[in-house]
Amino acid sequence: MAKSVRRPTRVMLLVATRKGAFLFHGDPARRQWRLDGPHLLGCVINHLVLDPRDGFTMLMAAKTGHLGPTIYRSTDRGKTWQEAKQPPAFAKAPEGQPGKAVDHVFWLSPGHSSQPGIWWAGTSPHGLFRSDDGGITWSGIEGFDRDVVARLNAAFVATPDGPIVHSILIDPRDAAHLYAGLSIGGSFESSDGGKSWRPLNRGVAADFLPEKDPELGHDPHIMALHPLNPDRLYQQNHCGIYRLDRPGEVWTRIGRAMPKAIGDIGFPLVLHPRDPDTLWVIPMDGTTVWPRTSPGGRPAVYRTKNGGKSWQRQDAGLPRRQAWLTIKRQAFAEDGRQPLGLYFGTTGGEIWMSADEGGRWRKIAEHLPEIYSVSAGSV
Amino acid sequence: MRVFVASPLHSYTGGRGEVEGAGATLAEVLADLDRRYPGIRFRIIDEQDRIRHHMRLFVGEEPASTLAQPIRPGQDVHILQALSGGAASAGGQVLNYDIS
Image 1 (cartoon, each protein chain N blue to C red):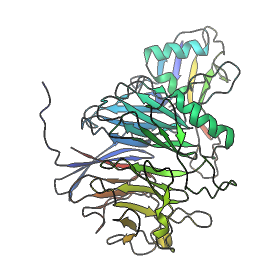
Image 2 (tube, chains in turn orange, brown; image 1 turned 135 degrees about the vertical axis):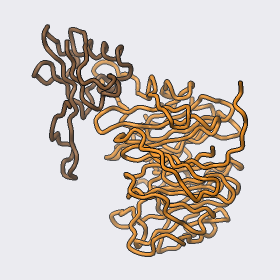
Image 3 (cartoon, chains in turn red, brown; image 1 turned 90 degrees about the vertical axis):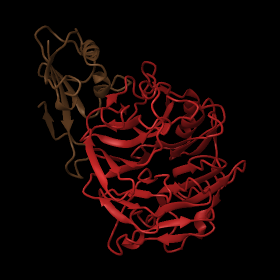
Image 4 (cartoon, rainbow over the protein chains, first blue to last red; image 1 turned 180 degrees about the vertical axis):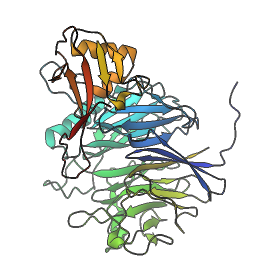
């Protein structure tokens, strides 16, 4: 019998940390939050995502300090977890040749709404994998290795902590139209379901490279595509905040309109799901030795309502001084509700939320392990 | 033979730290273990058949660096975790073994 269709009324926060996963169940008003966890205590969880296509399936990218990487699945909203039968893994290299091994799965994206069961995963070192069975078994994408990874490996030395594939985006109008972000590596596009890829980095700075305007090798920290206007892309890059309106090919640095004293460096970025011109960023100190903390010790979220032409500071409720927060690229989320709820998690184990689109912030959790990702699901 | 399994892998062995295994080499023993406890091998050995950085395998009392290591009758296999961390300066240095 088909499950009864019920309009989602509550928000569930999915929090991945360096020491396990935590679920926060909100009441309908988003005032009270019930903590469920830890799940997989001690595991390093890089990403934890609820499948919006069924509202029940969750995938978790996990490893431990000792054991190799894997993926856990839940089909009952996190009550029970089962390990993938065949986690993402690179092909065995020919005898005598060094082969790559997945260090960790960094990113998980549910597939197109017309393709239930399909998931995408990005790994470190660079790898793109696809599952056709809800995350039970995974296969590598050969065209990505050929068109992206091989080109990057030929031109660049990997960063010490390992290159990652993130921001796997699927065009809601066309399941075969994909984007992916690579740190380092740049933004890439596929129009044939991942069989072939091409760079999409014109206009994006890469100040850390000797070449002035390279075709690839950039460092997008995160990239997002607007669900109502999928021709509108944004990215928070190592070198600024950018917008791209397709079929255009040249990114515009909208971070130039940020206050000079704050700059336009950061990790995360969140789009308003009902307004392609509204988005939020959380600036960090990207000067000198790159502290990656709140500029001046005064945390703030910055919002634009006109596609990046101007930005407003939103810090009501956040600490006023001596607060040196770091928010990772996957640790900022929205809940889709009206008014939109925003949530971010810090490396110091705090979760902050705003129930009014950034107007006022309050802390809803503390003393968690280092937070790697925060996502919100409607249940 | 007896195979002693470190605690991070007990979720695969039903909580047991000592299990039965069969095989003439480490590779065969690990394949046997994976049949009995699906998924356990990939957490210990990567897709290039290398022992993972923070795992150590012993045959009898001797450390093994390759899966081709033969196992003589009567020898035990130990699958250990190579603990590190706890200090920023540890830099991945192996500080201790723990088979509890």
